[in-house]
Amino acid sequence: MPDRSVFFVSDGTGITAETFGNSILAQFPTRPRHVRRPFIDTPEKALAVVDEINGVADSEGRRPIVFITLVADEVRRIVTGPGCKGFVLDMFQTFVEPLEEELGVKSNHRIGRFSDASQSREYNERIDAINFSLAHDDGQSARNLDLADVILVGVSRSGKTPTSLYLAMQHGIRAANYPLIPDDFERGRLPASLAPHKRKCFGLTIDPDRLAQIRHERRPGSKYASIENCRYEVGAAESMMRREGIAWLSSTHKSIEEIATTILRDIRPDRLIY
Image (tube, rainbow, N blue to C red):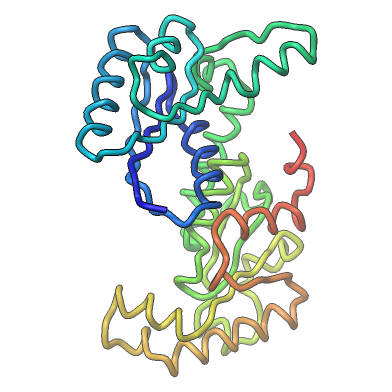
């Protein structure tokens, strides 16, 4: 399957269109060129996007794939009409209209997922969770750890920070993260600030070779990045987590989404229900 351009066109941020579209495209052996066009909420903007799509179709010699989430009929008709040379997949028409018929009610046709963010309790909880995770990144603060939903522990560069931020941004989880360092291994126990919250801890580990590769990019030629030190730290961290009864998994071959879902399943299963 030849590579080709894929447009994600939305009257909001485009997150829904891109997330869903990428999930579908992942089933095919192709590396498309992504073109994001958010906030297409007027006929004039729609016409400009159609011109861009048509220009790509002419220059590439094949029609682009176009995922759209457009609510306003006048805007949607322009992109889905015969004047557009793209292969258009209308996600709202595919799912919303059949659901309207099944449920026997009309959808609110709200433009954009975040149009009423200031009134959303869930949105404000996510903002609070992001601020919490930033304040408690990399062991910066031990204050208010009793408010944490989860505390990620593991050696430096094992994926704690991106996982913490993903949990906060996507699920409103107050996630702190704390690095395990050689001093902790010499003492043979968790840092004192974490001991009262051990039941909230979840560990991340990583293959030592992969860890050395990551650390060399940050501090090449250092003891911190040496394979011997990486093997020692990973082994010591896994032994400590096993001894303390802390659940853990390897981030070596798992995506952030997979890691976060596993943590939610084990720590906050209620967050898997919306």
